[in-house]
Image (cartoon, rainbow, N blue to C red; front, side, top):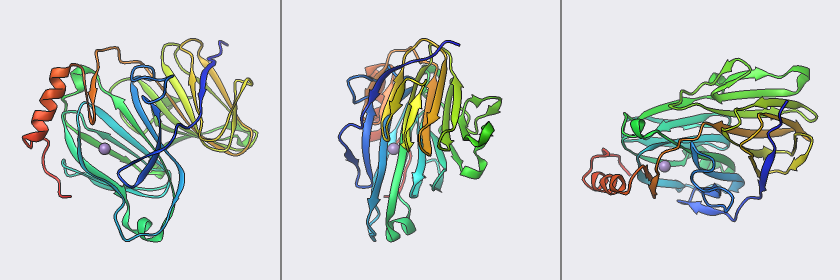
Length: 292
Ligand code: MN
């Protein structure tokens, strides 16, 4: 057993609003400990910690905007989010569901609170990750994977410890529900108080976890409180997560993409000239059309 130890435990940074519907803590690339390469292929994590939105008739969210060169992954824990994109895909994801959108060559989309949820009001809690693509995949065809909770592959832990939802990658032989371009693992560990889950990831994979509910102890060494992100060292392979109370933990680990990166706003490419091209293409309407 070679333990993968925690390098940093990061408290939720001050929140900001994305549009008027997403009240997020940006754990990366905005924190000093994690730049855009440190968690690659995960290049951005916005976390809307549990927040009550009062009822409204107004459609809260983010209006039509482009993306190119990567994927956006939205994981819903509380509330419902609706999505429309210029490739003709749309859907609503609710509690426990996952939306995996490959922007790749370019897409326009809008993300907002689902109508009935908005009108009723309620707790809202989401994670959005941006997953980078290799240069050879950045201009591939956009794709959309909407994965409801019942279609998420799951591994039941022994001793009533809880359940691992395997969003992508693999956990103890259970394959992830989403397809990915490069090797990565993305799991929700839903643990009962006292339950333990063991994980093994290659030493070089960039690895972290976010405590969504409850509180955990990691490797019998560190307590990681609610809404905190733990960044792991790039050595050692084994991690144990013990729930000191009922807990939900998002665990992410992936093979780093080691290529030049040029990022500006909603575009993540390899070189500045490709960012300029993305802006030109967007301006010329080459990302398609979507009604506001
Ligand atoms: Mn977006």
